[in-house]
Length: 160
Image 1 (spheres, rainbow, N blue to C red):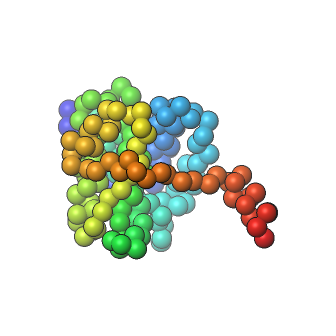
Image 2: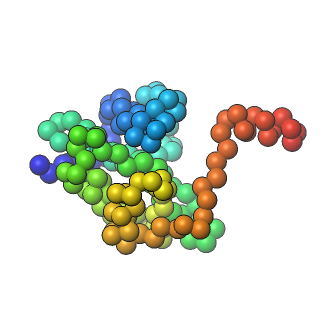
C-alpha cells in the first residue's frame, strides 16, 4: 500500500480538520482545537494563502497530512515551518508519515530554502528517534515560547 502524496485541495479541509483534532487528542489536548473548516479554507486557499498542506491518500481516503508555512530567519532568510505531520492512528507504521516527511523536505529543497524547522513534544520518543535518524538536529537548549489569546489580552491591557 503506497500512499499518494499530493497537494491538498479546498474540499479536503474537513478531513484535514479531522486529522488536526486527532493530533490534539494524541497530544492530550482534545479540546484545544478552535480552528474550523471555514478558517482552513479561507486562510489556506485564495490569493495569499498562509499555509500549504500535503495529504496522503490511500484508496481514496486521506490518511495523513503535513501542514507547512514560510517563516523568515534573520540568519537564514526564508525557512519552512512544519506545523503538523499527522497520520491516522490506525495507519501509523505503514510508511505514510515517512512519505509525508520526505515530501516536506523535498519541497523545502525545491524552494531553495536553507532550513526546515518544527517542534516535537519531549515525550514523543518515537518521533524524536525518527527525526534524529533522518539527520535532523534536536535543539534541546531552546524553549518554545507562546502567548495565548488570554495572555495577549492581559498584556495589551496592562501595557497600553
